[in-house]
Image 1 (spheres, rainbow, N blue to C red):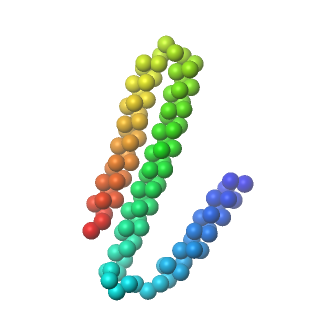
Image 2 (image 1 turned 90 degrees about the vertical axis):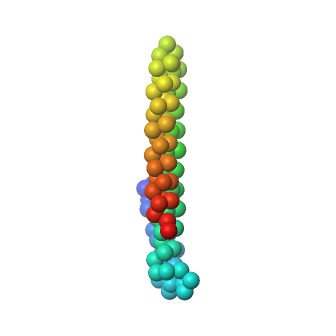
Image 3 (image 1 turned 30 degrees about the horizontal axis):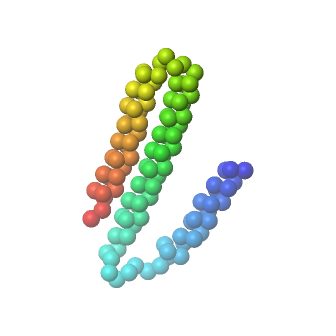
Length: 103
């Protein structure tokens, strides 16, 4: 059921974007220039979603682990903070790539 809903939403998004893709280029922007902004926003959106999802799963797993074994909380906390820093660095790399791709 979820796959059908996601597929329907993606298909709806493509259908709604078709008139924009078929429209003529504006005279003020060079040809294809606006796609850079759209792709940069898309990359940042996907990176932010994936980073937030990964961080949420990591925090949930760490909380569960600390609840089951309180004696290992220090080691788990250290690994959690290190993992969260790596996840956040990937989102920052996506931001850097998006900024560098813009004129």
